[in-house]
Image (cartoon, rainbow over all chains, first blue to last red; front, top):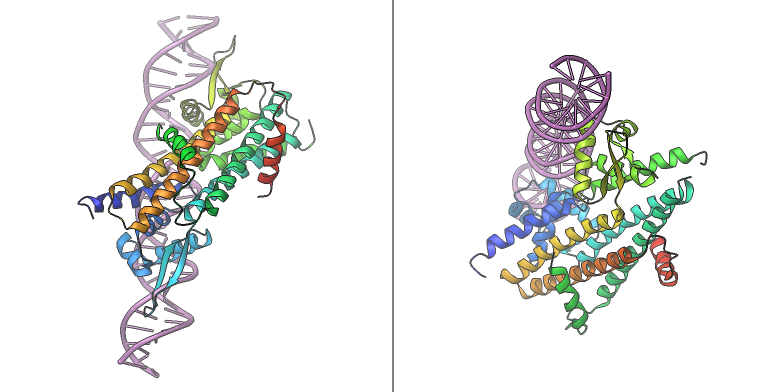
Length: 173
Length: 173
DNA sequence: CAGAACGTTCAATCAAGACTGAACAAACGA
DNA sequence: TCGTTTGTTCAGTCTTGATTGAACGTTCTG
C-alpha cells in the first residue's frame, strides 16, 4: 500500500457519500458502498459502524436500504455471529438502473402531458420530441448495462478499441 | 383544451418539481421548467410568481439558476418592463448533461482510487471495470445528445424505425 | 438460566438547504 | 424630482430528511 493510500481511500469513501445523495440514497449508504468497493473481503456490521464512525442504527437502516436496492449482499462468516456485507457483483449497474428509473419517470411525465393535455402545437411537438429522446437514452443505457452484465468476470476486454476511443471523449469533461 | 387539461398540467408541473430535486435543483426550478415547457409564449417574471404561488425572491433565484444551467432564456417583450422567460431549445438535453456530469464525477472518483490507491487486485479490477463502464455510458449519452441536437426543429423523424423499437423497450419499466 | 453480543426500530435531535419577505437599487414615467 | 414598478439579495424561518441513541427482541455462550 502506498503512503497516501489512506487519504485517497478516505476521500473516495466520502465522495461516494456525496454522490449517493444524487441517487436518492442517504450519505451513509454511499459511504458504505465506497467502503465495500475497496474491501477485498466482506466487512462486518461492527466494522462498518466503526470505520465510518456512525451509529449501529444507521448501519442497520442503510444496509437494509442497499440490500433492497440490490447493491450489496449479506454474507455469513463461519464462526462469527455478526452480519457481513459485500458489494453485489453488479453494484455499479444497479447504480445506473437508478438513473434509468428516474429517466423513465421523466419520460412518463412528459409523454403523459403530451398525450392528454390540450397544449399548443409547439409544446406538443417539444414534449413528444423530448419523450422520444429520453426513451432513446434510457433504452441505450439498458442495452449497455446488459452487455456489461454479460461480460465474464475475468474478461480481457476484447472490444477495447471502441471503448477506449469513447472513454477518451468522456475524459474531457 | 380538454376538460382535465388543467389537472394534468398542474400534475406535470409538480412532477417536474419533484424530479428536479434529483438533479440538484430546487423544486421551484423544476416547476418553472414545467410551466415554461407547457407555455407557447414566454412567461413574465410576475406571471411565474403568480401561477406558482411563490415569492418573487424565489423566482429571481431560480430563474438565475436555470439560466446558468442553460435550461431557460430571458426574452424581452416590447412594451413591457418585466423580464420574460422561455425554455431553451435544448433544455432537455441540458437535463441529460447534468446526469452525464454526475456520471463523470463518479467515473473520476472510481478511476482515481483505482490508479492511486494500493487496493487489492480484486478491488482494482472491479474499479477499473466500473470506470470503463461509466465512461461508456457517459460517452454514449453524449453521442445521443449530439445527434439529437443536430436534428432540425421541424424534423419528421426519418429514423423512426430504430427509435420506435427502443422506445418500446423503455416503456416496459 | 443469566449475561452478553447483536441487529432492529423509532422517537427525538440535528443539519442542510429551500423559501420567504423586507430592504434595497435601478429604471422608468409623470 | 417623486412615486411606481421591477428584480436582487440576504437574514431569518421553515421543511425535509438523515442520524443518533436508547429500548427492545433474539440468539448465542457459559
